[in-house]
Length: 181
Image (cartoon, rainbow, N blue to C red; front, side, top):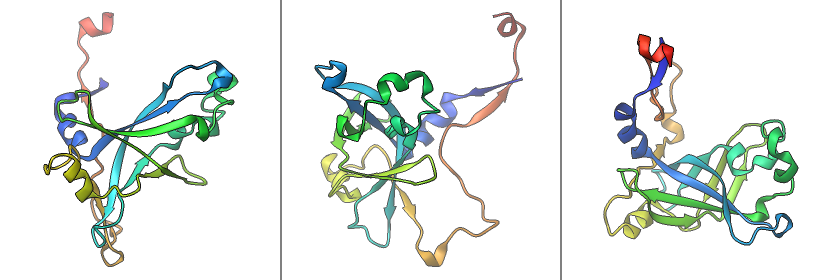
């Protein structure tokens, strides 16, 4: 048995909560004339429902946002990657339609907060609230939903079930033809 991802089971659920983060970079030191894609990752938004006027906070893996901070993880590329820093990069939030087509809207992140010990970072776009995103999308809901933060009176309990959106891995029977390939 081999694990397999079943796109029909996870894509709508995954896209309901996620957007795409694209890291673009350009440095004269490497002879670059235009920006190129450094990395892409899935990101998801958090919002404080008790303060809807607050900006959305986006969460993404730090090793994607700032790969030069992970020399052991990216050892094969550190010769050139070690010469890049945040000042060479542009961080863009790409909103996409549910059918996974090209981005419908893009926004530039203007603040990044790195966790000191974990592989995640928080990104913000000044003035990017859930209401603003809906307005930018012609009054319709944006193509994703932010996850709501609970207030301190309703924290997750020790034995309370928790659903985390993402890829669902299923066990699949391997056929003889697949084994031979």
